[in-house]
Length: 400
Image (cartoon, rainbow, N blue to C red):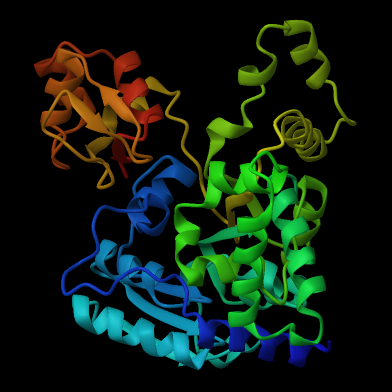
C-alpha cells in the first residue's frame, strides 16, 4: 500500500475501534502518569524543577484523549494541543475532555506529517504508541522534532520486537486467514478470537496471551489494536537509535531505567560486567548503545521503548557539590501518593518506606526553606537528602 493508503487504513481502524477505550468520566482521571507531568518529567530528565510551568504541550496522535486529559489536569498552567488522524476518535477525545473539565486543550484533525500547520513550538511533545503505526516513522519523528522548542522534552513510546514476537506471529496468521477480507477489522477480531479459542492450551501463542495481554484484550478495541492493525514497525536497540538519530535530537534516557541495569542480570559475574564496559570503541554513545543491546538480548521481554529526547540546551544537575545542594530549595514531587505517611508510592508507583529522619525532612519541604536550613532542624544528613533525590521524591530549585 502507498503511504496515503496506509494512513487511510489506520484511520479506518480507529474510526471503527476508538483507542484507548477507557471510560469517559465527569471528573479528573484517577492517579497520574509522571511522564505526563511537566514538573516530574523535567525533574527526571534534568535533576531540577523547571523554571517555567506556563508551557505549551503537544499530544501527537492523541487518540481518544486518555493521555490528553491527563496532560491537561496534571499541568494546570499549560496550554495543550491534541492532533490525530482519526476523526471518529477525535470526537471521543473532545467528549472526554469536556466531560472532565479539561478545558485548556484544542484538537486538530491532522496527521503528524502535517504538524507544521500548528503555529509555534512546544515545550513538551507527547507521542505515545503512534510512530510505529506510521508508514514512514522517520518522517514522522522529524516533523515532530521541528516543533520542539530549545530545552524542551519529547516523550516517545514505540514497540519493541523481542517482547512482541508472538504478537507478530498472530498478526500474520490472522491476515492469512482473512485473505481478501483483510481491512475488515471486525472480521479480523472475530478470526483472532476463534484462533485463540481453538489452539491447544499449551500453545506458545496462547500461553503468552494469557500471561501478558488477556485482561486488556477482553475489550475488542485493545484486541484489534494489537492483532489486526494494518501498519506496525517493531524496533530493537539498533533500529531504535537509527530512528532517534534521524530526529537530530539528543537522547536523554529511557523512562524505565531499572530495566536497563546490567547489574540485575550479570551481577553474579563481575568479570562479565567488566567486559561489557569495554564494548565498542572510545565513543561513549556507541558503547552505551551496545550495552543496551546486550541487556535486551539477555532479557528479551522488551515489548516497548519509552524514552525522552531533547533539543539542546538542556542543563542537568547531579547535586554532587555540597554547597550547591545546601543552597537549593526542595519541595515534594507532585507524583507521589500517600504522603504524609512513612509508607508511600513513588513517582513510578513503587512502595517506598521512609525512615523517621526522611519523613521529618520531607514534611518541611514546602518550597520555601533551603536544604541547609531544613537539615539544621532534622537528623537527615546530605547523603540522606541525596537518597531522596535519587528516588525522585523531591524537586529542587537551585540558588540563582
